Length: 97
Image 1: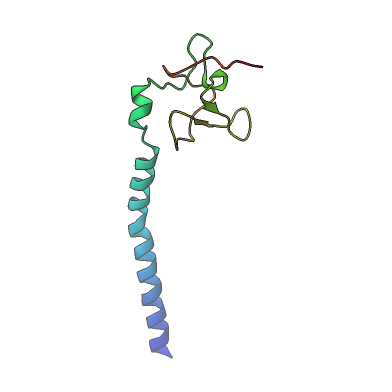
Image 2: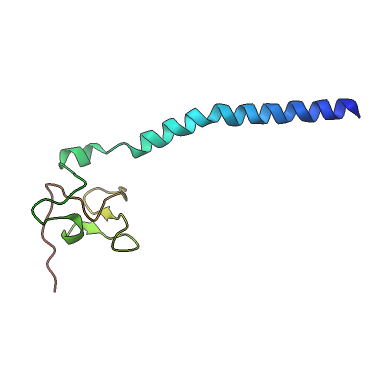
């Protein structure tokens, strides 16, 4: 019975060690995913409007769930972190019907 407890304790310590060792790897992978895309940089993306022009009134903007949530951009496929208050050089006025 005593050996069973030692074995369980060793297994628990191994699992905890692996969990602690994986924390830096998760941090690195999240930082990589959060890095701005080269296309954002090429288009001069900025998190604030310019002269009243902003993503929420651009024809390329794909709105998020609410008006204040981040959305996407038709020109930056797969980038769903576009702020409705942002702006870039590809801005084109949204024509309302």
